Length: 245
Image (cartoon, rainbow, N blue to C red; front, side, top):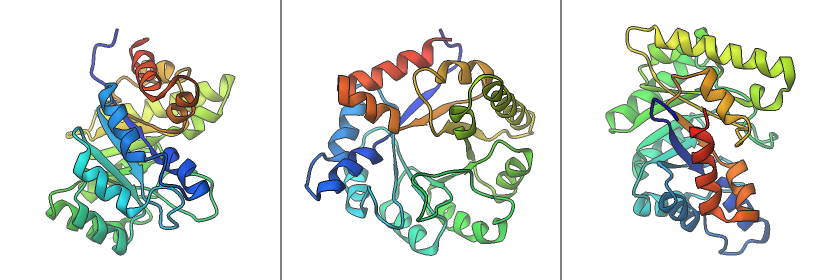
């Protein structure tokens, strides 16, 4: 069993993806979020993309009204999205990179290179009482930038690990471990989350290799499992995997 708490935040984007394919009012990502909470999820994550391919603004507004755990809004670092977040007031805003041509988020945000653009947006959100996280690659340079930007949280992009096999997966785990150790040695370590491509099979090795992770953001795999076993079972299955250390 784990010796430290790791929270599971479920991303319900792909419930909305299925809805948008047919333009129907169902399946409702809000109802999915409530089912995830009832099954033991510690928080709900959604990504409001600028092209609105799945989650819609009204979904976020309804989630804010009904989620009882924690609402994490992933979004591009733009003025328009910052204005939206300040109006809806999620618990956490996670800035992520975004390109219209990508199928899903394909890498971490360059917090170092985008420092001057990110700084005022982060400041506005913090002044509005919203905690800010950055979805970044597991690199000391990006951690340093996050620290200088004044955020309290970071989320490591785990796609490289999730997509690798054998020695390459071990190398990716080592990179994640080293970056987490770098963060842990800071005078004020940042709250560490991880996400992208995580499954019940690759979560236990990740948590063993990176014991300072405090939160996982998982969506596609849980929604996929829900097709076969239902969303409550899928959530509980991941919670068990997080304990299988």
